[in-house]
Image (cartoon, rainbow, N blue to C red; front, side):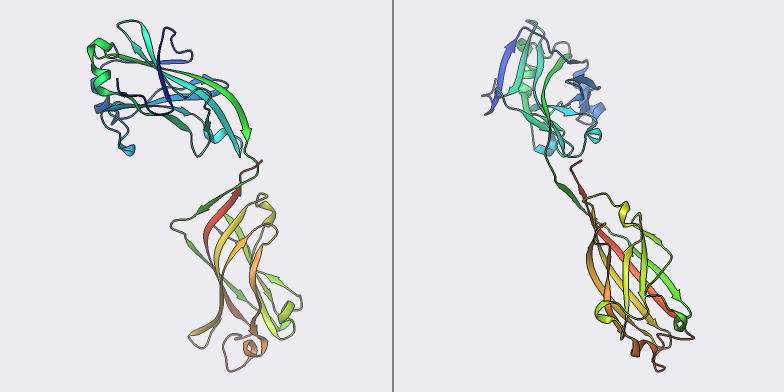
Amino acid sequence: MDIPDAGVLRHVSDGPPAHYTVQVKSFSLLEKISTGRYESGTFQAGGYNWKLIFYPKGKKSKNVKEHISLYLALEGTSSLRPGWEVYATFRLFLLDQNNDKYLVVQDSVGKERRFHKMKSEWGFDEFIPLSTFNEDSNGYLVDDTCVFGAEVLVRTERNTGKGESLVMIKDPIAYTHWWTITNFSEMQKECYDSTPFTAGNLKWKIKFYPKGKGAGLGNCLSLFLALAEPTTLPPGSKIYAEVSLLIFDQMQAKHCSGKDNYWFSASSNECGWERFMLLSTFTSSYSGYLLNNACWVQANITILGRVDALSE
Protein backbone atom coordinates (compact mmCIF):
# COMPACT_ATOMS: atom_id res chain seq x y z
CA MET A 1 0.00 0.00 0.00
CA ASP A 2 1.15 3.60 -0.55
CA ILE A 3 2.73 5.57 2.27
CA PRO A 4 -0.11 6.95 4.45
CA ASP A 5 -1.09 10.59 4.09
CA ALA A 6 0.15 12.93 6.79
CA GLY A 7 -2.39 13.10 9.61
CA VAL A 8 -4.26 10.03 8.34
CA LEU A 9 -4.15 6.77 10.27
CA ARG A 10 -4.65 3.38 8.60
CA HIS A 11 -4.88 0.11 10.47
CA VAL A 12 -6.57 -3.30 10.38
CA SER A 13 -9.41 -4.20 12.74
CA ASP A 14 -11.37 -7.37 13.49
CA GLY A 15 -14.48 -5.39 14.46
CA PRO A 16 -17.06 -4.31 11.90
CA PRO A 17 -18.29 -0.70 11.62
CA ALA A 18 -20.76 0.15 14.36
CA HIS A 19 -23.12 2.41 12.46
CA TYR A 20 -23.47 1.61 8.77
CA THR A 21 -22.38 -0.77 6.04
CA VAL A 22 -22.69 -0.43 2.27
CA GLN A 23 -22.29 -3.55 0.15
CA VAL A 24 -21.60 -2.80 -3.50
CA LYS A 25 -22.20 -5.56 -6.02
CA SER A 26 -21.11 -5.21 -9.66
CA PHE A 27 -18.67 -2.51 -8.60
CA SER A 28 -17.30 -2.23 -12.12
CA LEU A 29 -20.68 -0.91 -13.30
CA LEU A 30 -21.04 1.70 -10.56
CA GLU A 31 -19.35 4.55 -12.36
CA LYS A 32 -21.49 4.06 -15.46
CA ILE A 33 -24.68 4.12 -13.40
CA SER A 34 -23.87 6.92 -10.96
CA THR A 35 -21.69 9.20 -13.14
CA GLY A 36 -18.76 8.60 -10.84
CA ARG A 37 -20.48 9.37 -7.52
CA TYR A 38 -22.65 7.37 -5.16
CA GLU A 39 -24.51 8.50 -2.03
CA SER A 40 -25.63 5.92 0.49
CA GLY A 41 -28.89 5.90 2.35
CA THR A 42 -29.20 7.89 5.58
CA PHE A 43 -28.14 6.43 8.91
CA GLN A 44 -28.21 7.80 12.46
CA ALA A 45 -25.32 8.28 14.86
CA GLY A 46 -25.05 10.59 17.85
CA GLY A 47 -28.52 12.02 17.28
CA TYR A 48 -27.80 13.14 13.72
CA ASN A 49 -28.37 11.79 10.22
CA TRP A 50 -25.37 10.89 8.07
CA LYS A 51 -24.54 9.31 4.73
CA LEU A 52 -21.50 7.94 2.93
CA ILE A 53 -20.39 9.43 -0.39
CA PHE A 54 -17.84 7.71 -2.55
CA TYR A 55 -16.24 8.09 -5.93
CA PRO A 56 -15.14 4.78 -7.52
CA LYS A 57 -12.38 6.43 -9.56
CA GLY A 58 -11.63 9.46 -7.41
CA LYS A 59 -13.23 12.85 -6.97
CA LYS A 60 -12.60 14.68 -10.23
CA SER A 61 -13.24 18.15 -8.77
CA LYS A 62 -10.19 17.58 -6.54
CA ASN A 63 -8.17 16.13 -9.40
CA VAL A 64 -7.96 12.73 -7.68
CA LYS A 65 -6.89 9.90 -9.98
CA GLU A 66 -6.26 6.18 -9.52
CA HIS A 67 -7.83 6.22 -6.04
CA ILE A 68 -11.21 5.69 -4.43
CA SER A 69 -12.45 8.83 -2.62
CA LEU A 70 -14.68 8.24 0.41
CA TYR A 71 -16.47 10.82 2.59
CA LEU A 72 -18.86 11.15 5.51
CA ALA A 73 -21.58 13.79 5.11
CA LEU A 74 -23.98 15.32 7.63
CA GLU A 75 -27.54 15.19 6.34
CA GLY A 76 -30.15 17.89 6.96
CA THR A 77 -27.83 20.78 7.76
CA SER A 78 -30.72 23.15 7.01
CA SER A 79 -32.29 22.00 10.29
CA LEU A 80 -29.25 23.06 12.31
CA ARG A 81 -29.88 26.08 14.46
CA PRO A 82 -28.23 29.24 13.07
CA GLY A 83 -24.61 29.52 14.15
CA TRP A 84 -24.38 25.92 15.41
CA GLU A 85 -21.86 23.26 14.41
CA VAL A 86 -21.49 19.53 15.05
CA TYR A 87 -18.04 18.29 16.11
CA ALA A 88 -17.36 14.61 15.43
CA THR A 89 -14.65 12.01 14.97
CA PHE A 90 -15.22 9.18 12.51
CA ARG A 91 -13.68 6.06 11.01
CA LEU A 92 -14.31 4.72 7.52
CA PHE A 93 -14.02 0.99 6.75
CA LEU A 94 -13.27 -1.34 3.85
CA LEU A 95 -13.73 -5.09 4.28
CA ASP A 96 -10.94 -7.56 3.49
CA GLN A 97 -13.21 -10.43 2.45
CA ASN A 98 -10.34 -12.94 2.33
CA ASN A 99 -9.53 -12.58 6.03
CA ASP A 100 -12.78 -11.10 7.42
CA LYS A 101 -10.92 -8.05 8.64
CA TYR A 102 -11.38 -4.35 7.97
CA LEU A 103 -9.06 -1.67 6.72
CA VAL A 104 -9.86 1.35 8.91
CA VAL A 105 -8.99 4.89 7.79
CA GLN A 106 -9.32 7.84 10.16
CA ASP A 107 -7.86 11.21 11.03
CA SER A 108 -5.05 11.42 13.55
CA VAL A 109 -6.10 10.50 17.10
CA GLY A 110 -8.27 13.10 18.80
CA LYS A 111 -8.79 15.23 15.68
CA GLU A 112 -12.36 16.50 15.41
CA ARG A 113 -14.07 17.67 12.27
CA ARG A 114 -16.56 20.55 12.21
CA PHE A 115 -19.76 19.80 10.28
CA HIS A 116 -22.00 22.77 9.52
CA LYS A 117 -24.05 24.35 6.74
CA MET A 118 -21.00 25.61 4.87
CA LYS A 119 -18.99 22.39 5.31
CA SER A 120 -21.14 19.28 5.68
CA GLU A 121 -18.70 16.71 4.23
CA TRP A 122 -15.36 15.35 5.44
CA GLY A 123 -13.32 12.32 4.44
CA PHE A 124 -10.41 11.09 2.40
CA ASP A 125 -9.64 12.12 -1.16
CA GLU A 126 -7.25 9.18 -1.51
CA PHE A 127 -8.99 6.59 0.63
CA ILE A 128 -7.25 3.70 -1.13
CA PRO A 129 -5.29 3.34 -4.40
CA LEU A 130 -7.23 1.51 -7.09
CA SER A 131 -4.24 -0.76 -7.66
CA THR A 132 -4.42 -1.88 -4.02
CA PHE A 133 -8.20 -2.14 -4.10
CA ASN A 134 -8.21 -4.28 -7.24
CA GLU A 135 -5.44 -6.66 -6.12
CA ASP A 136 -7.08 -10.08 -5.60
CA SER A 137 -4.82 -11.03 -2.70
CA ASN A 138 -6.01 -8.03 -0.63
CA GLY A 139 -9.63 -9.22 -0.64
CA TYR A 140 -11.19 -5.78 -1.02
CA LEU A 141 -12.90 -6.58 -4.31
CA VAL A 142 -14.11 -10.18 -4.60
CA ASP A 143 -16.44 -11.29 -7.40
CA ASP A 144 -16.88 -7.60 -8.26
CA THR A 145 -18.26 -6.98 -4.74
CA CYS A 146 -16.93 -4.76 -1.94
CA VAL A 147 -18.12 -3.54 1.46
CA PHE A 148 -17.64 -0.06 2.96
CA GLY A 149 -18.66 1.13 6.40
CA ALA A 150 -18.65 4.01 8.89
CA GLU A 151 -18.50 4.76 12.61
CA VAL A 152 -19.28 8.25 13.93
CA LEU A 153 -18.71 9.65 17.40
CA VAL A 154 -20.37 13.02 17.95
CA ARG A 155 -18.25 14.92 20.44
CA THR A 156 -20.34 18.03 20.94
CA GLU A 157 -22.59 20.63 19.38
CA ARG A 158 -21.41 24.18 19.73
CA ASN A 159 -22.75 27.65 19.14
CA THR A 160 -20.20 29.64 17.17
CA GLY A 161 -21.51 32.87 18.67
CA LYS A 162 -22.90 35.88 16.93
CA GLY A 163 -22.15 36.39 13.29
CA GLU A 164 -23.67 37.26 9.97
CA SER A 165 -24.05 35.89 6.47
CA LEU A 166 -23.64 38.30 3.54
CA VAL A 167 -25.10 37.27 0.19
CA MET A 168 -24.49 39.49 -2.85
CA ILE A 169 -26.98 39.01 -5.67
CA LYS A 170 -25.36 37.96 -8.96
CA ASP A 171 -28.09 39.17 -11.33
CA PRO A 172 -30.07 41.80 -9.40
CA ILE A 173 -33.50 42.84 -10.63
CA ALA A 174 -34.47 46.51 -10.93
CA TYR A 175 -37.92 47.48 -9.67
CA THR A 176 -39.80 50.64 -10.64
CA HIS A 177 -42.81 52.30 -9.00
CA TRP A 178 -44.74 55.33 -10.27
CA TRP A 179 -46.70 57.68 -8.03
CA THR A 180 -48.88 60.51 -9.29
CA ILE A 181 -49.32 63.14 -6.58
CA THR A 182 -52.38 65.36 -7.01
CA ASN A 183 -53.76 68.48 -5.29
CA PHE A 184 -50.33 69.69 -4.24
CA SER A 185 -51.55 73.13 -3.20
CA GLU A 186 -53.96 71.55 -0.72
CA MET A 187 -51.32 69.46 1.08
CA GLN A 188 -51.14 70.44 4.74
CA LYS A 189 -49.53 67.43 6.38
CA GLU A 190 -45.79 67.23 6.97
CA CYS A 191 -45.41 63.97 5.03
CA TYR A 192 -47.40 61.90 2.54
CA ASP A 193 -46.76 58.23 1.77
CA SER A 194 -47.31 56.37 -1.48
CA THR A 195 -49.19 53.11 -1.61
CA PRO A 196 -46.79 50.36 -0.51
CA PHE A 197 -45.24 48.32 -3.33
CA THR A 198 -43.19 45.12 -3.41
CA ALA A 199 -39.54 44.82 -4.44
CA GLY A 200 -37.35 41.87 -3.53
CA ASN A 201 -40.04 40.29 -1.31
CA LEU A 202 -40.16 43.42 0.84
CA LYS A 203 -42.69 46.24 1.08
CA TRP A 204 -41.52 49.77 0.23
CA LYS A 205 -43.04 53.25 0.06
CA ILE A 206 -42.11 56.71 -1.21
CA LYS A 207 -42.23 59.52 1.39
CA PHE A 208 -42.99 63.02 0.08
CA TYR A 209 -42.53 66.16 2.21
CA PRO A 210 -44.29 69.04 0.37
CA LYS A 211 -42.76 71.71 2.63
CA GLY A 212 -39.44 70.03 3.19
CA LYS A 213 -37.77 68.27 6.09
CA GLY A 214 -34.69 69.00 8.19
CA ALA A 215 -32.18 71.08 6.22
CA GLY A 216 -34.74 71.50 3.43
CA LEU A 217 -37.60 72.70 5.63
CA GLY A 218 -39.39 75.72 4.20
CA ASN A 219 -37.58 76.05 0.87
CA CYS A 220 -37.22 72.55 -0.58
CA LEU A 221 -39.12 69.40 -1.39
CA SER A 222 -37.86 66.37 0.54
CA LEU A 223 -38.15 62.90 -0.97
CA PHE A 224 -37.30 59.48 0.52
CA LEU A 225 -37.67 55.77 -0.17
CA ALA A 226 -38.43 53.74 2.96
CA LEU A 227 -39.23 50.22 4.09
CA ALA A 228 -42.98 50.13 4.60
CA GLU A 229 -42.75 47.42 7.29
CA PRO A 230 -39.24 47.72 8.78
CA THR A 231 -40.07 45.69 11.89
CA THR A 232 -40.58 42.59 9.75
CA LEU A 233 -36.82 42.45 9.14
CA PRO A 234 -35.23 40.03 11.65
CA PRO A 235 -32.72 41.50 14.12
CA GLY A 236 -29.31 41.83 12.51
CA SER A 237 -30.67 41.73 8.96
CA LYS A 238 -29.80 44.40 6.40
CA ILE A 239 -30.68 45.03 2.75
CA TYR A 240 -28.15 46.63 0.41
CA ALA A 241 -29.84 48.46 -2.46
CA GLU A 242 -29.26 50.98 -5.20
CA VAL A 243 -31.95 53.65 -4.98
CA SER A 244 -32.94 56.46 -7.34
CA LEU A 245 -35.84 58.90 -6.97
CA LEU A 246 -37.10 61.18 -9.77
CA ILE A 247 -39.63 63.95 -10.31
CA PHE A 248 -40.42 64.45 -14.01
CA ASP A 249 -40.81 67.67 -15.92
CA GLN A 250 -44.10 67.06 -17.71
CA MET A 251 -43.46 69.74 -20.33
CA GLN A 252 -39.82 69.04 -21.13
CA ALA A 253 -37.81 65.86 -21.54
CA LYS A 254 -35.92 66.13 -18.27
CA HIS A 255 -36.21 65.31 -14.60
CA CYS A 256 -34.77 66.06 -11.18
CA SER A 257 -33.22 62.98 -9.58
CA GLY A 258 -31.14 61.62 -6.75
CA LYS A 259 -29.26 58.30 -6.65
CA ASP A 260 -27.51 56.45 -3.83
CA ASN A 261 -26.54 53.00 -2.53
CA TYR A 262 -27.79 52.32 0.98
CA TRP A 263 -27.96 49.65 3.70
CA PHE A 264 -31.58 49.38 4.90
CA SER A 265 -32.36 47.86 8.30
CA ALA A 266 -35.14 47.97 10.90
CA SER A 267 -33.43 50.90 12.65
CA SER A 268 -32.21 52.67 9.50
CA ASN A 269 -35.08 52.20 7.13
CA GLU A 270 -35.13 55.14 4.72
CA CYS A 271 -32.87 56.72 2.15
CA GLY A 272 -33.40 60.05 0.44
CA TRP A 273 -32.75 63.74 0.28
CA GLU A 274 -33.93 66.57 2.56
CA ARG A 275 -33.01 69.11 -0.14
CA PHE A 276 -34.23 67.16 -3.14
CA MET A 277 -35.46 70.19 -5.10
CA LEU A 278 -36.00 73.89 -4.44
CA LEU A 279 -39.69 74.66 -4.01
CA SER A 280 -39.24 77.71 -6.25
CA THR A 281 -38.03 75.47 -9.07
CA PHE A 282 -40.74 72.88 -8.45
CA THR A 283 -43.59 75.43 -8.56
CA SER A 284 -42.19 77.64 -11.32
CA SER A 285 -44.55 78.19 -14.23
CA TYR A 286 -41.53 77.90 -16.52
CA SER A 287 -41.07 74.24 -15.60
CA GLY A 288 -43.39 71.24 -15.84
CA TYR A 289 -42.57 69.57 -12.52
CA LEU A 290 -45.93 70.73 -11.14
CA LEU A 291 -48.57 70.76 -13.85
CA ASN A 292 -52.31 71.06 -13.18
CA ASN A 293 -51.46 70.89 -9.48
CA ALA A 294 -49.96 67.38 -9.92
CA CYS A 295 -46.50 65.84 -10.20
CA TRP A 296 -45.04 62.50 -11.29
CA VAL A 297 -42.66 60.71 -8.96
CA GLN A 298 -40.71 57.55 -9.78
CA ALA A 299 -38.79 55.24 -7.45
CA ASN A 300 -36.24 52.74 -8.75
CA ILE A 301 -34.70 50.14 -6.49
CA THR A 302 -32.22 47.36 -7.21
CA ILE A 303 -31.45 45.00 -4.33
CA LEU A 304 -27.76 44.14 -4.49
CA GLY A 305 -27.27 42.08 -1.35
CA ARG A 306 -28.56 40.95 2.00
CA VAL A 307 -27.09 40.29 5.45
CA ASP A 308 -28.73 37.91 7.93
CA ALA A 309 -27.62 37.17 11.47
CA LEU A 310 -26.18 33.71 12.16
CA SER A 311 -26.87 33.72 15.89
CA GLU A 312 -30.18 32.70 17.41
